[in-house]
Image 1: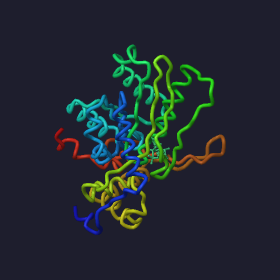
Image 2: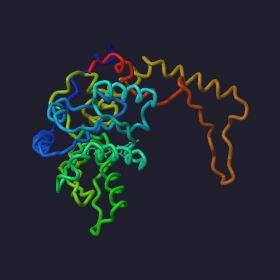
Image 3: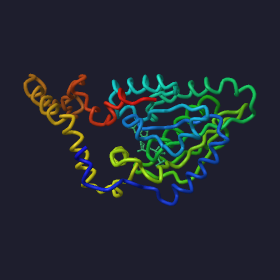
Length: 287
Ligand SMILES: Nc1nc2c(ncn2[C@@H]2O[C@H](COP(=O)(O)OP(=O)(O)OP(=O)(O)O)[C@@H](O)[C@H]2O)c(=O)[nH]1
């Protein structure tokens, strides 16, 4: 696309990522199951190609996280797509207990045969930076400890707004008999991101630091994506409709809080369209 022509490749592979990649590869060999966390807005671009061969040889669940930020219709198409590729996939919001419970039930089902046989099981959580691995681990840990309370103080994985917060592999015990541990791992990218647009999508969704791309270039890319989708036109249509609608002004409620009128969500006006970047790819991509 023309709008990506204005800059070079996007690559971010600092020293800690290189050593973490080696550590993850070694630890993956021991894992009984892998939860591969991807960003629901970019389910293909947020896959780490370098780890795929190893991950795909294990029991694996792809968790499309941050579903609250993506277009629900498009996520459904993605889960159908992964289904057609015979890959277990579930869309989640790491901050929602209900959502994480569904993922846990799925994980338990996949480990069903091993649970009675093994004294210890290892579930490894991997993914590119900032996709929500630590947030997911904290939710899993919280749910598990409410099922069977542990004596010791609960450890928490550090969650951060910026990519690259987790720098070491850390284990969290979530069950006894058998002992089940979930391993949080640092977010790692590939040494060379295969194409410019993948790099820009990763930057826009927060997996690559803004400074690697440059804020101006990133802003231009976002504006170009919005323009290609004719999003500003939809926003102005929405605004016009709001103006026409009687009684759509802001109101002050009983608690003196100003409530702005909220535009109704329709298939055409879903604001999360903006953030579901990989839209047409769903239908075009082959397993
Ligand atoms: N809206 C939304 N935000 C989320 C979700 N999951 C995580 N986040 C946010 O995404 C940001 C990154 O989350 P982390 O859990 O630190 O991500 P990570 O994959 O461990 O990041 P690294 O340490 O870079 O590997 C934080 O601001 C989280 O609060 C989600 O499902 N929805």
